[in-house]
Length: 286
Image (cartoon, rainbow, N blue to C red; front, side, top):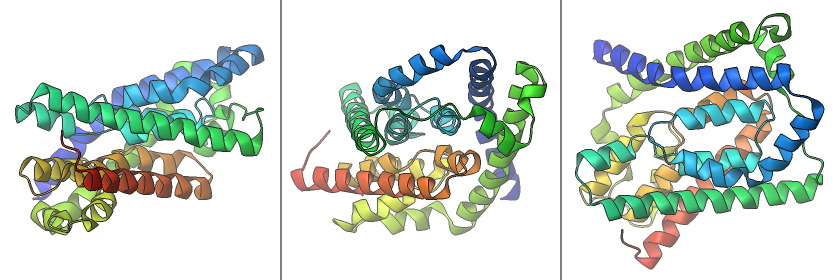
């Protein structure tokens, strides 16, 4: 089992490397090259970020959620944009649907629902925060992120700083993913499946908890149980909406505001569960 755990951990980590590197490269460019005027333009355009976040999030794998966590910690995207990405991210759902030859119209409807919920919730979050804090917004915090990671980005070139950031987060993700894979391997996916199946309206509540597990196994279990008819569409979506791959894990690593991170986590869970319950109650079928 240990060999499988190590291999799965390495594969999951390698998938994230391109996203991590490109994200930090862009962030370093913004910090080093943009003027104050350009930064303000970027922040103003961020009001429409949830639309882009909801669209990018449906791309399979959790790379965009990881990128979004770093961009949010750097003050480049709004909380609503981050929230939209997290909610629309489905990790391994799409590859499994395709491999199981699920009808295309079913796949499109599920992805559209996830994206729509993500976009709507993202705009709502930004609207509430903007009303509380006013229209001024926050300043770019990339320099603060550099201080937090102790990399002294301003002293080196863009490429070196981006590589430094990437390696630090990559090693962190590898370490946590290894322990999560080891834990799930010890418990067994069958036990995890039994935890969420056959619980009627408790299904969305339990599926949401499983979705918060920062590992692709949660999305695999939820999707397979749905395909086998054990979970309803609402329960599956409750877990997949709450899940964001390792994006949430990276957020706790790169964002200093623990209270803010906890609020985002609770909002993810509540949005996923409430959406799932509504879908279960209405009997919506895909």
